[in-house]
Length: 242
Ligand SMILES: [Zn+2]
Image (cartoon, rainbow, N blue to C red; front, side):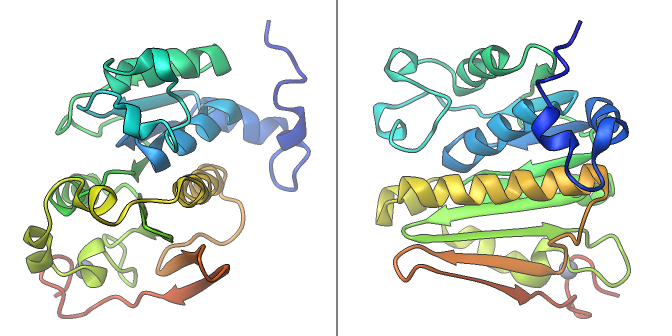
């Protein structure tokens, strides 16, 4: 028997209630990339009681990850990130089902996809798969002191896709993990971005509030500034236009 207190601080939110909680436990979210943003996003989704959470990351935990990747501790260094994340999340909430995925697996059965990867080739592949499946893609990115979050639903008539924002051609310009290795990353920026991504996913799953679709949330920790700008659909977009 589930403890009724577990979700009591969120079910009292406007628009949530027990009906919302039941809907959440019947929903599924896929988190791809279990780094600084993905671990925080997955932690919030598991805590909130999303019924099925897919986890995907081919990497192993490195000691240089520990300053920001909150699901791992020193004992996990060298272990598979996906396995270590699953073990940590099981300790948070045994009521959610955690499923490990290889990259490139089908997205069937999921309601939303969180892109917490760190390189454009992976982002482009995941976006193409989510677009084909007509699933919303939560884009979460953090580098240096800067964070970005958006939702891409470019399969909808007036909504931008990822390539209305980042043109297809620009994806080859950078290799995997060049960002964090190159300019570094402030741990709390990754955490902020992961938390905003999780908030957007929960809002979407419960149809609460105004989604970040067609808009970009920008956080600059060095200046202590946050803002939201519009991302228009590009009618000439090579991916979703015409
Ligand atoms: Zn587009």
